[in-house]
Amino acid sequence: MCVPASPQGHYNPAEHISDAAKDLFCLFDKDNSGSITVQEFIDGLRSFKVDLSEDDMTVLVEELDEDRSGDIALEEFEKLMRMQA
Ligand SMILES: [Ca+2]
Image (cartoon, rainbow, N blue to C red; front, side, top):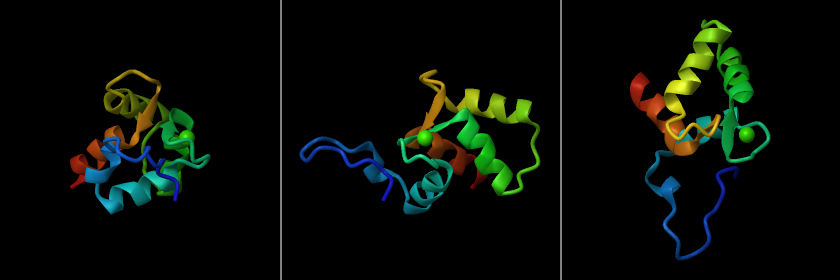
């Protein structure tokens, strides 16, 4: 279980996110830090044989990373799932 649990009684933004998105997020988040770094994202896409250049992947991260934290949170990752749906 690599989705970080929020303290009891606090709103958990992960709760409304689909299990499929969480499972995929876990595959990308190799160090279980709760967010996907650019490098984890690129490694993850490569492991799924996604045919994108590193530059294209970096642009994709920048599009997903709404809060400019430099990595992809679960909520941001879910947008990618919706794009593909
Ligand atoms: Ca991580």
